[in-house]
Length: 111
Image (cartoon, rainbow, N blue to C red; front, side, top):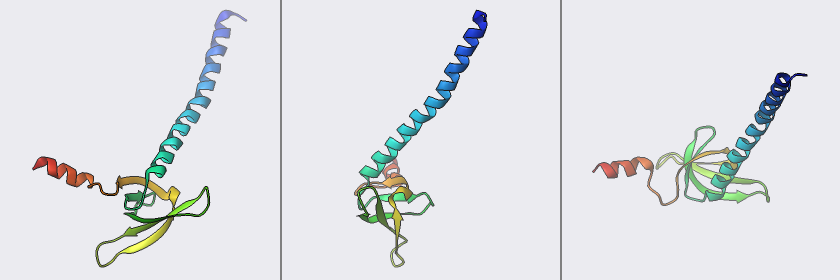
């Protein structure tokens, strides 16, 4: 084998290793971010589910050491509805309890 073939085999090997290792690293980072988000969520937070339902968490129930569920209140005054979801259904935290929504904050700055 000449040196060019050896270099080509090494380069291909490194690319294969990179293609296997990089997705694993990004997946671990993503899982850590989701876990941190789940740990920071509490009653009174406004969230969006993976199905697009927006509401306020009114209760968090621990089923066992590994599983949780939450009760989500949606709707407007006079027509409120509560639903129970698995904790993994949380897609996004829109506002923390006691915090003003982002839209109101930007309006206050304009005044």
